[in-house]
Image (tube, rainbow, N blue to C red):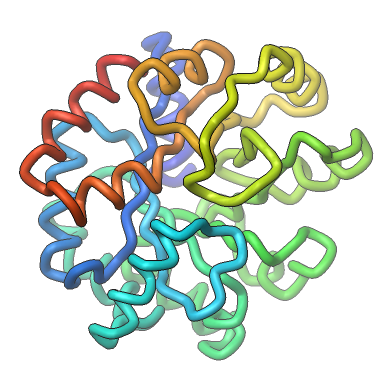
Length: 257
C-alpha cells in the first residue's frame, strides 16, 4: 500500500471522509505552493492534488486556466513540479497526487516520469485526457503500491465503461459530479447517491467526487455519499484573490466534510 491506500483505510476505520484540495503548482510560485500545501496539511487535508500547468487544459474552467497561465509564465513545468514534491517530502507526510495532461508526460517519457515521480514521493497521478484504453504504457510502469493511477468516471459513463475504469484505477476513483469543466456552478443532483451506489456495486475502491464543489454546504452534501470530496477552483480562486482568508475557508471545509 502507498500513502493513498493507507489514508483511505485509516479514514474508513474512523468513519471519516477524505478532504482532497487542489492547487495549481507554481501559482504564483513554487515557494508559495509549498507554503500552501503545508498549510493545507496543518488545516486537515487528507490528500492534496497538485496541478501541473499546461497550455491546453481541456477539462478546466477559466479559474484553473488562468492559474496555469500564471504558473507557465513563471517557467513551471512537470519536471519542476516533481522537484517541488521532492523538496516538500521531508516536511509533508500526506499523499500528494499530480493532476496533469498527457502531453507533458509523453514529452517527459512515460517510464522516466513514473520513475522520477515515485523517487520524489508522488503517490498518484490523474490524467484527464488519458482514458484507460490508451493508458497501456503508463500502466506497464506503475506497479501496484507505487504510483496510483486515478481515472475519471462521468455521470454519462456506461456500466461497461465503469468496469473498465474501475479495473484500471488504483488509489481511488475520481467521480466527476457533472458533465462540464472545473469551476462550473454545481447543481446538487438527487441522483448522485444512486449513481455512487451503482458504482460501488461494481468496485469496492474508494470514490472521491469533484468538479463544482465550492461551499462547505456542498462539500457536506457530497461527503454523505462519497469517500472523499475534491475541491479545486474555489481554492485556487481564493488563493489568488484573498490568500489571507484561505486558512479559515479550508478549516470550514474540513469541518463540513
